[in-house]
Image (cartoon, rainbow, N blue to C red):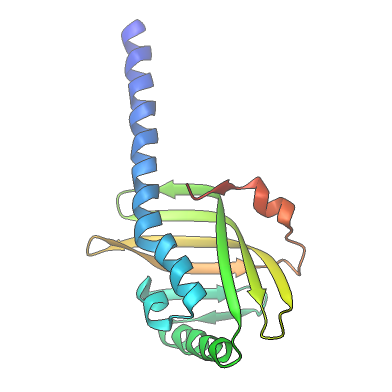
Length: 165
């Protein structure tokens, strides 16, 4: 019985460590560059984090996009933000992070802080659901869905989730 408990405990610890390794790898390969590309309005860097088979779902807009259409939308938004000297930062917090060797499912909240060229500040909160897939040894975003739930997602929701590190 003691051996069974010890073995079970070791498996739990090993599983926890493996999950943390996946999270660190995903943070390094996807989320840190995502945050950087988002704040710099860098379309190429941003889209390079996505699978060419990406499915992008904007729940608030009731729209779904493939890679090409998503890239066009991001490029248009980024150019607008650059033209009007808008600044934006995104922060992510996680509710759930489930991983295998080549697939991951992550949910959480985001906070977007915007400074308009007039100096006006705005903060937007929302929820995300992402499925990632390892492609040629690198994690890529395969399915990306988000919503503000009609503006009902709050700072309290955001802070209730776990930070990236």
